Each structure stands twice: as structure tokens, then as C-alpha cells.
Length: 256
Image (tube, rainbow, N blue to C red):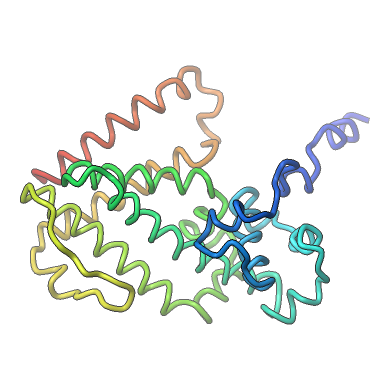
């Protein structure tokens, strides 16, 4: 029957979630931090980040993580309580890695205000593209209401502190573009001076607008935008559109 043939032609859940060429070696662990030999609990979190980033929370099969690491499913319950609690903790960890990756991109760029902001924006888009399932989970909480509930229950304070840090760093980058020089900022999680960040209402509005704008660009480029996947010429315009878009965001940072 036609539906049976269609089912047979679909890629398997395993092949979607687990790349055949992936090796869980030092290089893999170092994608997410500085420890080449993490504990088993940490490995479970990192493989979950990789898998959810690829297939999303709804499709994610935690048993494939156990198979990849050669551990029993009971270890998930022991360390995390449940599949959704594991995803919630992995989402927090991914967001922490993401926030630091954006800032590292700015620090590694040419140390001019424009170059730093451009690097931060580019890293934002790249991380959303490379881990689009994880990005979608945080951008659209209804994608998995149960995971969102566990984030609110167990990780809301840490998530909020990271969001404040990320916004604070963006405000500092925009401020530098506006004044034409790189400032010195000692921002860290839990140590963000909200009063100083908001002492210039216009600056806060401009930075907030850029945050919204880059979120839209990240969502568009993170995966296949279903309504436009078959529109002729869209894919060819993405790179040019991205450069054009970032140019305008930097100019908006300077004069907005």
C-alpha cells in the first residue's frame, strides 16, 4: 500500500538522532567545554544537547543516548529523574554554553566596536543553526510544555541570570559602537548591574530591538522555514540577506 511504501522510505529515528560518523571522543566533549574526559552524568547531558539540537525535544529518544554511551536507562532516572528533566537540565547547560560562546566570539574578533558586535551576531545565528532543536525549545516554550515546566521548576533562576548576562553584554557591545571605542566590562552571571545597564533608556531600546531582530534571523536560518522551503530563489538569497541584515543592525546600533 502507498502509506506502507512511504513509511519504509522515511529515515529511521536512529539515523535522524544519531549521526553514523559521530564519535564520542575527546574532540566531541571539547566542543562543549574544556574537559576532555567528563563524568558519565556530564556525558549524558552533552550527548542529549547534541541529539536534541538535531531532532528537537519531541522526537528525542533518551534510550538512544543510553545506547550511545553503553549505560542502562535506569541511570537516567538515577541522575535526572526522568527524560524531560534530563532535557530541561540539558537546555540550561546549552544556554550557558551558548551565552559564553557569543561573548568569546566577540572577544576573539578584531577589537573594534563594529567587529565585536558583528562577531556576536554571527555567533548567535551559527549556534541557533547548529543546534536548532535546542534553540527552538528555548524560543518556543510550548514546543514541549513538560520540559518548560521543569525548567521553570528547577532552573528558572539560573536561566534568568544567564539571560541578564547575555543582554548586558549586548548592551555593552551596542554602547561601544555608539561611542566608537571598546570599553572595559566585568560582567558575569549574577553580577550584572541593572541600574547601569538601563541608565540610558534609548540604548536599552536599541539593544533590545537588535536582540529581537537577530532572534528572527536566527529562527529563519536555523532550519527549514516550512512556508518558504519551495519558494524559488529563497536559498540563494539567504547569504546576501544575512550580510545586508547585519549591516543594518550595526548601523542601527550606531545611530538608532
